[in-house]
Image (tube, rainbow over all chains, first blue to last red; front, side, top):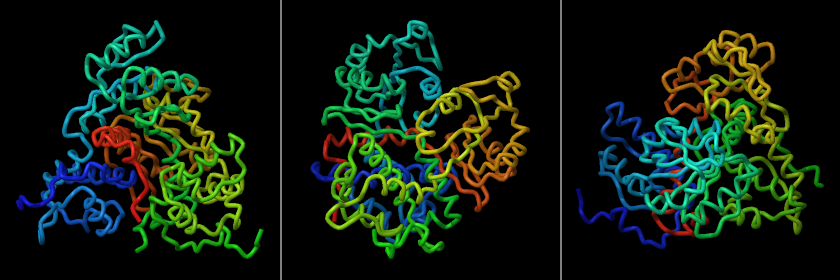
Length: 229
Length: 229
């Protein structure tokens, strides 16, 4: 390896990376993990792009935000690129997460295996319903929401998920902010007001259906193609 | 209005629209719906872009794939642009959807209000568990999965959601394909093999957490900024 190549930690800390690029890093990571599990050791930007419907130039440009990766004539080593992408995304370290709301969706998320694979674990789950508090679901004991700030402080937790009904989502957000949470994933179908120092990502489960209705309506198997030059 | 402007239906049917553009149409639509609900009647590409962290050129370029919208000096009329985007996405018509798997996540999705807002409705839900078949959840009677093909044909349903555990997801996909479904949303954390004429969108609930861990790790409130020129 050429030690003079910029490493992820060399990224200027004031670099502005477009949100869509970060989303694509997640997609690249998953495809690489899939390939590695299938035994593949190296891959070119062109192959990686083709698998995901992007051009090789797009792949190289996206990675270029974070440094230089790969070897001339070889491409990328899957294991190195996976490690680099996890460094970029911050997921080479474990991320304990708190969850507010243990209804059907919350219970499903407690058992969701996709989190652990990317180094996230639901460390504590909270509900306001006395009937739920004290129950153990998927190995997690449900706590009363009044314990939130204590748990967040004691365990040093930085991320939270809002899984309460829409009409209680803002209150849940306020509680997470007051507890010192730095980033929030919102599953409730409502827009939340948060202070600017708290990052928020909204999950809208209808978007995937819309992508499908577009594809099916336009009746083009090749609709999801490469971006034009 | 200038009647010579290209309308969405004038798009050449062999046009290739990048997947990321279609995703952004969904985001624009949600922001416009939010603004319209707040009473706003018109908006410029710059305002719409600023609200979502894109440049005005990006907004205009994305819309340009589908035609010409807006008025010089006025910008876009929210109601017209919403209608145009729903035409693009195919969601000016109702989309009945079938769901396979009525565990915790499936039950949560049966009650999810975000679908109806975008004209999707879960028309029928199926499970293989005799204890669930016949129950009514959120107003939907759970049917045995053997009834799937009949229901899809009778009701003319084109989209399906896979909400079964990972190890049964491929079987569920095969059943949907055999029933004639044209598009599938996969909530199971596993890659599915489908024939090329069937569209598939995978939901990975860990991606949103990764976007947060990136933002929190890089400690940049402005991380999610505008794409570079």
